[in-house]
Amino acid sequence: MTAIQADADTASVPEDGRHARRDRNRLAVVDAMLQLYAEGNLDPSSDEIAERAGLSPRSLFRYFDDLDDLVRVAIGRQHERLLPLARLDVSVDSPLAARVARLVDQRLRLFDKISSVGIVSRVRAPFQPLIASELAISRSFLRRQIEQLFEPELTARDPADAAGSLAAIDVLTSFESLHLLQHDQQLSPAQIEATLVRTIARLLEA
Image (cartoon, rainbow, N blue to C red):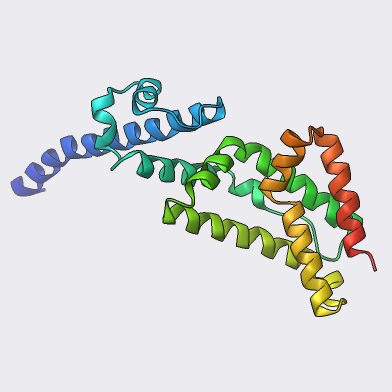
């Protein structure tokens, strides 16, 4: 190793340390915001977020441009965490009843974990194009899952009828629908599951 290389390596250590500390603090801020969301505080102040993260309020915006930027990153982190729950581990060749049950179970578990972040993302979407775009991508992915899962039943239908059934199932299994069933209609998870399974099966049965 040359003297120049040694000097360069030595100089990189403090810089690497600063980057690592910045990354840790940035993650602490995001996790603090997600914790506050989970506790029902859907519009935390910068002081509340900084206190939960163990940072000073002045230092908070060293890591984010503003609160909107922080909200976007927090929503993105929550979605990344929940990607495993978005998988549908059931074959399209399985009986219809098994596929319907698996879809409903997946949606109930996924949206239960999304919880308050789902509300925040939908409130913020009209004002933050990046969140709106991510939400549209998520909705398109979930709709495509339904289309693939029930392809045998849908392709056997008249195109207009198939489109109507697909749209109805997409709405029934959406975050908004499940939120209304739970909070406005006051149905238990078991009641929601039974209702959705029964309704979707009727939409798809020949």
